[in-house]
Length: 349
Image (cartoon, rainbow, N blue to C red; front, side, top):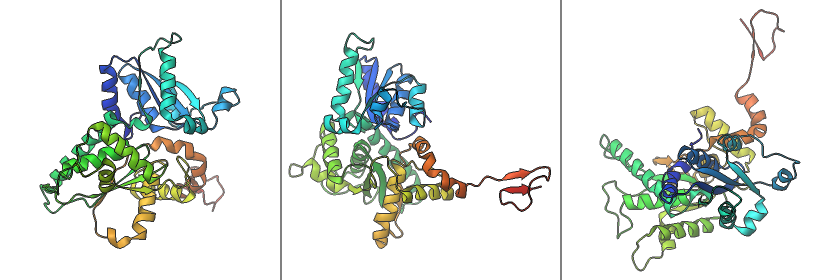
C-alpha cells in the first residue's frame, strides 16, 4: 500500500541515482495528500535515505501558528509513520516561487550545519524528470510483452486507444515515448509487428494542455530524444499524444458527478479509482470525450492505465458519507427478536 501508484516506477530510477551519488536524504514536493510524496517517503526509508517532504496546503500558516495540525488522514498518515520531516507552503507560495525553488531551498537548508543530512537528493514534483520518466519506458515494455502474449493466441488483437491521467507530465512522456519506440514511429513511418499504434490520451488533472505539451517536450529533450531535422520536439509530442483538459474544479477538488462516478465504478467493477488522478481522468474520458463522439470509439479496444493513489479517498470521507449510506447500507441483526419489527435497518433471524 505504501508504494501503491505510478510513482514507484519513477522512484526505481530516481533512488538508484540518489544512491549512486552517495546521497543521505531525499527532498521532494507535492500537495497535502500527495501520492508521490508518500511513495517517495516509504521507498526512501526502504533504501536507507531520510525523507523530507514539502506539502502544499492552504493551512500552512494555521499549522505553523499551532491553530491547526497537519493531521493523520490518508497519505499524510503514511508520511508520518515512516518519520518524514514535513515542511509546509501555501498554494500561493508554490505558484509564485515554483516547486523547484522550494525544493532547492530545503536542500540548501539540509546542507547547512543545522542538520546531519548534508547530501540531499532533489526530486521534482511527481518525480517527473528525464531520469524518473525511464520508469514508464519500462512500463510500456511490460505492456508490449503482455500484448505479444495475447497476440500469440489471437493475432488480430490490437490496442486502439491508451488513456491515463497526467499531473506533472512524466508518466505521459514515458508512455508516449515508450509506445512510439515500440511502434518505431520515431523514424519515418510505422513498421511494427504490433500493427498500427494506438491513439494516446493524457487527461490533465491540473493546468492546461499547452502546459503539458511544453513540459513533456522539455522532459523528452532532457532524455536525449532524436527526431528528424524538420520536426521539433513539441511537434512530435503533439502528434504522439492528445492532452485533454480534465481538471474539473481543479487539482484534488472533486465535483459531485466525479464522486458519484467513482462510487458507481467501484460498485460495478470492484476497482477503486482515486479522486485526484484516475477517477477524474476516467470520468472525463468516458463522460466528455467518448459521449461527445461515440461512433469514434464504438467497438474499439481501449486500455485505461490505472495509476493508483486510492489512499487519497480517505480525505473525501465526509463528501462520500451520504453516498455510502445508500450504496453500502448497514443493517442490524435482530439476534434475539427484541428489536422493532418492520424497521428497514433490522434483519430478523
